[in-house]
Amino acid sequence: MIQPRLRLLSLAALVPAAHSWGLCNDKHTHCASWAKDGECEKENKPFMQKECALSCGVCPLLCRDVEEACASWAKEGFCESNPTYMLKRCATSCGVCAVKCYDKEPGDVCGQWARHGECEKNPAILSTCPVSCGVCTSICLDKHNDCPNWAEAGDCSKNRAFMLMNCPRSCQLCAEPEGTPPKAHDAPTPFNCANHDNEQCLLWGEQECGVNPEALLTDCPRLCGACTLACVDKAVDCPGWAAAKEGKACELDSHLPTMCPQSCGICPAIHVRAPPAKDEV
Image (cartoon, rainbow, N blue to C red; front, side, top):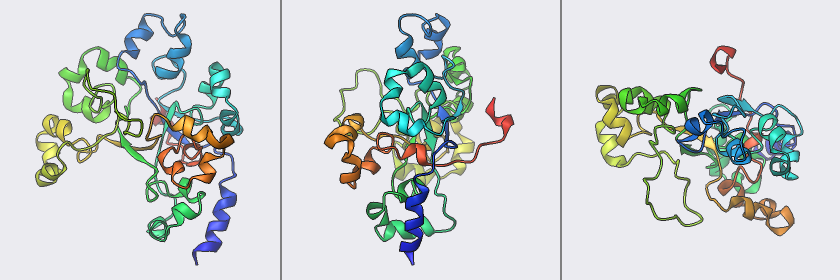
């Protein structure tokens, strides 16, 4: 019963992913300050475009690819050779947007496929069932366009409960503390969002998030809903791994697309309906 549907999915994977929506976030907490100092247009422009995309106006908070050829252009290396155009027009394919994840099939269809091992057998399923197939990562992402500026103004301390829920990245909820030793190459991104003591968080329960939000959001961000499930590479070496074997490593290694979904082109293929226009502020 599964195979006919999977054959259709293989064809669906070839459809251009022009409607894959994500969240454009700065990668450094000092981006707002740097942008105010004019660094977006100075000699650091290439660095700022990639690392401070939101503060530099490269992409709005809610961003996506707007050209049908973005995925193929990114594979050909244009994100690096023509960043001024590509980071703005192909934000998802170039990794500026962290694509929000959800399973597209109704009910438990994706779960059934995953339990039958179809995620490994048929890579086309990964973009259709990214949650069930383990493609997605729970990470800290800002949910408001002004988060970097609010954080720069000290609101992470003055309005902590609101800011931790809505601006977890700018408030460094999931950032590594300074002086942390470098992680192994296959270690998770420092923006991974997880409860610090999952057993204790479960004992407290979600109701405690409303009673004592500042403490619970700090210790149990995943329980309290501060995390976003998104499609991102899980290792810093993913671009190199994906480029190996004459660019066919993602096809030859069934585990690589799950570990490196952005570098393997899975993230741009996750189609997400565009949110209402009023939310695009």
